[in-house]
Amino acid sequence: MTTTLPEAGPAGMLAGLAAAGYTVHQRDQFAVFDYTIEVGPRAGETVRIGLAMVPDWPLSPPPGPHVSPRLGHPKGAVHASPLEREGEAWEYWSRPAVNWAADRTVRGYLRHLRTLFSQLESPA
Image (cartoon, rainbow, N blue to C red):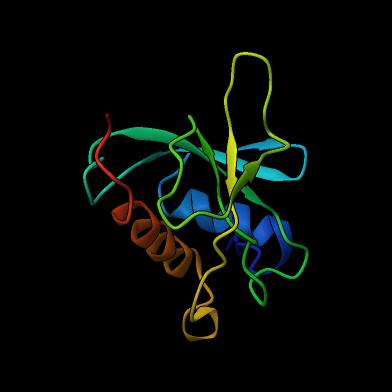
């Protein structure tokens, strides 16, 4: 018997993240997972990422990552996150994925995350 992973919608996005090796938890309409920053001055640090599960994945990407703890982003566009809970500090980076049409996959979105984290400043 062959099992086929869903390719579209929130289930497809969750399956893609799991296939990429992430342990994903669903919180409301968000996929939340631990992410180790790969590049830049914060390389090696682990943060939590929350991605809105868009209904038309992979035609549309998540609008931008929610990040915990708050790191700020030097390019701005940082806002309050609905994932904020007591004891958990979250922020939303309104940084849409550029060139989404070229690679509408989890791999393409992870590349977007790497770019965002490479732009961070060194921790104080």
